[in-house]
Image 1 (tube, rainbow, N blue to C red):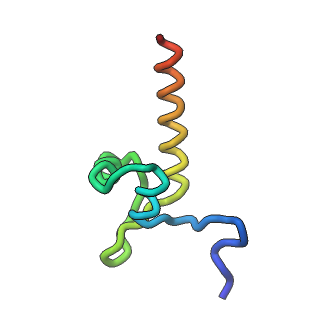
Image 2 (cartoon, rainbow, N blue to C red; image 1 turned 180 degrees about the vertical axis):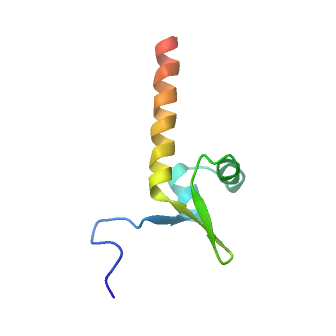
Length: 73
Protein backbone atom coordinates (compact mmCIF):
# COMPACT_ATOMS: atom_id res chain seq x y z
CA UNK A 1 0.00 0.00 0.00
CA UNK A 2 1.36 3.43 -0.93
CA UNK A 3 2.09 5.92 1.81
CA UNK A 4 -0.15 8.98 2.04
CA UNK A 5 2.89 11.18 2.59
CA UNK A 6 6.47 11.19 1.46
CA UNK A 7 9.55 11.92 3.49
CA UNK A 8 9.44 15.47 4.81
CA UNK A 9 5.74 15.86 3.97
CA UNK A 10 2.99 16.07 6.52
CA UNK A 11 -0.26 14.16 6.52
CA UNK A 12 -3.44 15.72 5.11
CA UNK A 13 -5.29 15.22 8.40
CA UNK A 14 -4.36 16.27 11.94
CA UNK A 15 -5.64 14.93 15.23
CA UNK A 16 -7.10 17.15 17.96
CA UNK A 17 -3.82 16.96 19.89
CA UNK A 18 -1.72 17.77 16.81
CA UNK A 19 -3.94 20.77 16.06
CA UNK A 20 -3.76 22.03 19.64
CA UNK A 21 0.03 21.71 19.53
CA UNK A 22 0.34 23.38 16.11
CA UNK A 23 -1.84 26.36 17.07
CA UNK A 24 -0.59 26.53 20.67
CA UNK A 25 -4.16 26.54 21.99
CA UNK A 26 -6.11 24.49 24.50
CA UNK A 27 -8.88 21.99 23.91
CA UNK A 28 -11.68 24.48 24.76
CA UNK A 29 -10.39 27.04 22.23
CA UNK A 30 -9.98 24.33 19.59
CA UNK A 31 -13.56 23.16 20.01
CA UNK A 32 -14.71 26.80 19.89
CA UNK A 33 -12.97 27.10 16.49
CA UNK A 34 -14.47 23.81 15.32
CA UNK A 35 -17.98 24.77 16.43
CA UNK A 36 -17.71 28.14 14.65
CA UNK A 37 -16.54 26.38 11.45
CA UNK A 38 -13.22 28.24 11.55
CA UNK A 39 -11.59 24.83 11.03
CA UNK A 40 -12.82 21.98 8.83
CA UNK A 41 -13.18 18.63 10.54
CA UNK A 42 -15.01 15.34 10.52
CA UNK A 43 -15.52 12.46 12.89
CA UNK A 44 -13.88 9.10 12.31
CA UNK A 45 -15.43 6.82 14.90
CA UNK A 46 -14.79 8.50 18.24
CA UNK A 47 -11.97 10.65 16.84
CA UNK A 48 -12.17 14.16 15.43
CA UNK A 49 -9.96 14.80 12.38
CA UNK A 50 -9.00 18.30 11.21
CA UNK A 51 -7.64 19.14 7.76
CA UNK A 52 -4.21 20.75 7.67
CA UNK A 53 -5.43 22.94 4.82
CA UNK A 54 -8.03 24.48 7.14
CA UNK A 55 -5.39 24.95 9.85
CA UNK A 56 -3.17 26.74 7.32
CA UNK A 57 -6.13 28.85 6.11
CA UNK A 58 -7.00 29.80 9.70
CA UNK A 59 -3.42 30.95 10.32
CA UNK A 60 -3.45 32.99 7.09
CA UNK A 61 -6.77 34.63 8.08
CA UNK A 62 -5.42 35.49 11.53
CA UNK A 63 -2.24 36.96 10.03
CA UNK A 64 -4.34 39.05 7.63
CA UNK A 65 -6.53 40.29 10.48
CA UNK A 66 -3.46 41.21 12.50
CA UNK A 67 -1.93 43.07 9.54
CA UNK A 68 -5.12 45.08 9.06
CA UNK A 69 -5.27 45.84 12.78
CA UNK A 70 -1.69 47.06 12.80
CA UNK A 71 -2.30 49.15 9.69
CA UNK A 72 -5.24 50.86 11.39
CA UNK A 73 -3.14 51.98 14.36
